[in-house]
Length: 62
Image (cartoon, rainbow, N blue to C red; front, side, top):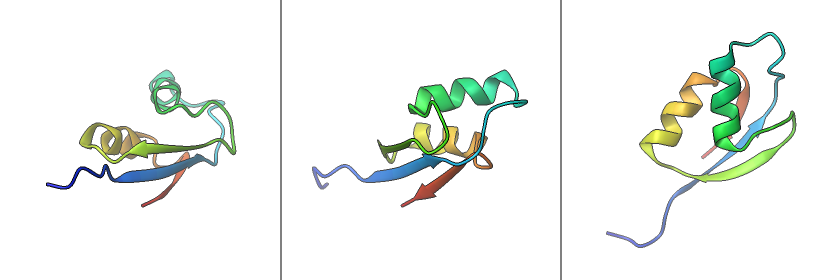
């Protein structure tokens, strides 16, 4: 196995106003606090699961 961790880039593109509290908590856990914020996260099953919950609020670059 390679020691290199695969990363995924995520940017929040839509607001959480009017969204369920669960979506707000997922974005916070991903480190996204406002529109335009970008994060580079480890590409793990847990992160992929969170991204699938808020796929309509974020843009993902593999």
